Amino acid sequence: MEIAAEIILVEDNPSDADLIKRALNKNNVANKILHLKDGQEVIDYLFGEGQWKGRTTTNTPKVILLDLKMPKVSGIEVLKRIKSNPETKGIPVVVLTSSKEDPDIKECYKLGVNSYVVKPVGFEDFSRTVAQLGLYWLLINQQPKW
Picture (spheres, rainbow, N blue to C red):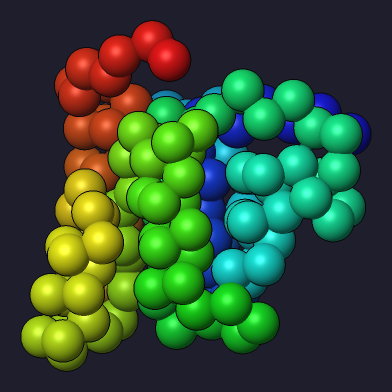
């Protein structure tokens, strides 16, 4: 099973995931969004494990939008795994979470997160923020060819 994603969205809340996908699609930011529902799923996808065994792991996304508070494997643990592996540490990771906790923010930056964004509460602000994130990471930001 081969899916080449431009954006990996790691979000366990179906409502937030739908809002994020709609905001990105509405602004024509991403054609290939892969929504994974927990930390274990993203680890399996990135490293070709579990249900993604045999996947060509050289097809990396342009950005990962990562929630922190998730079942199975937390966003912090996912971030540690991504940024500690030479094959994946160059993938930009944006934490998109409801946590404004300073220890979470510090830990994420210590681990190498590229950006930390607190989800806005209002629908319009939420949509605008997600659209801006997508535009920046997919169209404005320049990344090396790995």
